[in-house]
Length: 132
Image (cartoon, rainbow, N blue to C red; front, side):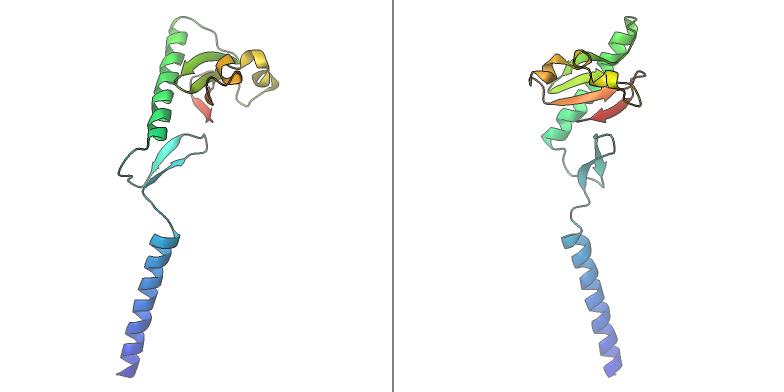
């Protein structure tokens, strides 16, 4: 009978330890994280969308629309600034990046002057390369 209680206590201790590690040490599983491109994505099932995530999502939609608009007008893309979307400057870059992408004349003036504090880099096909 004594062994029975010891097993029950050990099982309870293990369950409590697992809950502690999972929920206290492990942190919130329902949140927003950045993927390898810097874009916020859902991790789990967040209850709400923070304003900084909404701002980035709106800027990404705007950047892709801006790219499409420029493409429809016949623009040939190279390393260049397309414009701004909210607090984001939108740049076209080479993939992989080259020295041409770092030249001042190919970067958005609004970002260089501090009028925007973030940027979205698209490749020449309009795919997101990096968001900072």
